[in-house]
Length: 212
Image (cartoon, rainbow, N blue to C red; front, side, top):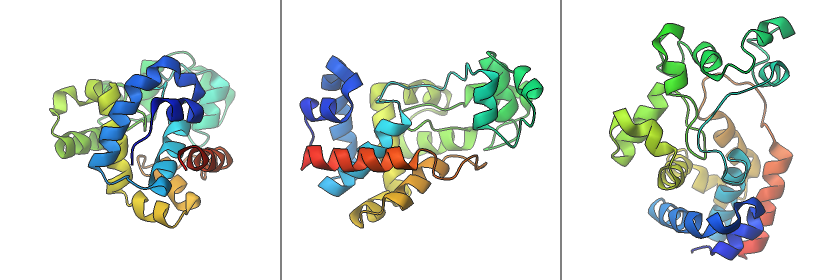
C-alpha cells in the first residue's frame, strides 16, 4: 500500500508542502522493505514521526543546554557542573559521549561528531553507519551526508525497521516491542526505558486511523 501527501500531512502536520517530496521517498522505501500493510505502515510511521520530530530532524546537532545533557545522558553526567562544561558545544559533546562506542575511536579521533545521529531514525556510531552503507550500497565516506537526505533518511529508516524484525511485531500490533527496538536498537548505551512510549503509541494509533 502507498500513502498520499494529504495523509502524511494529517499524520505529521508540520511537514506542510514538504509532504509531497517526503511521501514519494517513503513509499519507495516502504515498498522495498515490505512495509506494505496498514499495520506495518502505521507502526513504521508512528515511530518515524516521533523519532524525527515530524520528519524535521535529518542530523543530530547536539546544541544542548546543561539540563538537556543531563536528561539524555544521566549516567554520564552526575552534576550540573559536569554537563555545563559541554553546554552549547555540540562537537565537543558528541566526541565525548560517543567516544569508544559503536566502533568510534576516542575523543580526539572526532568520530563522535562524524558519526553522530543521521537520518530520520538518527543512525548513530561508526559501526551502524558502515552497516547501513554496506546494506544500501552507499560509499562509507559519504554515508553520513547521504543519511541526512530525504531519500537516505527514508531508505535507512525502512531498512532498519525491516532488518530488526519490526514488521513481525507490527503484524502482531505490538507497539511496545517495536518501540523498544527503534528506541534502543541503534545504541549500545541504554539511557531511557521506552523513551516517549505514550507518544509513540498515540502516533501509531493515529497513523492507523488515517491510513485505514
